[in-house]
Image (cartoon, rainbow, N blue to C red; front, side, top):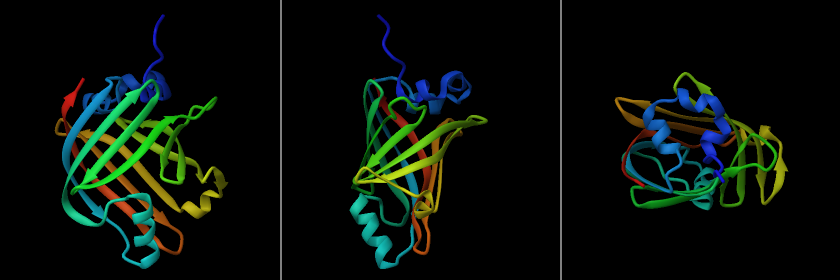
Length: 182
């Protein structure tokens, strides 16, 4: 009996093989990945945005923050623990039942993405959002940019989330190198 493919290879299908090696290593099928690097984090400073960042465990703004990412895989389910300058942010990724979408749960919020390949980059397109399991209009989530790629042999990422009327919730961009992947 063969096991099901890991989350990202399953959702990307044949497009998976066209991605760069660092992206495949980070999003592949090994049970555990530990990666380290740095990230520049930005975000608005108004009180509602600061409160939301705290509620969701999102990182606070700051340049060249040390970043450690641990990924634990169990079938298609992945637990991502990110430590920005020592502060922990955890999310759970999985496949949406009967849909070709990736689900990311971060506290009370669940985001659903369609994964597209843009050259050698994964472009995460937000398709729906839920809070405490209740669907929300996408207009309330404003703009979400999320891309995973590679540069100079390292895994790179760029995430930028902006909310209507409130501004930038969080944006982080940087790189990671895998230090343990087994």
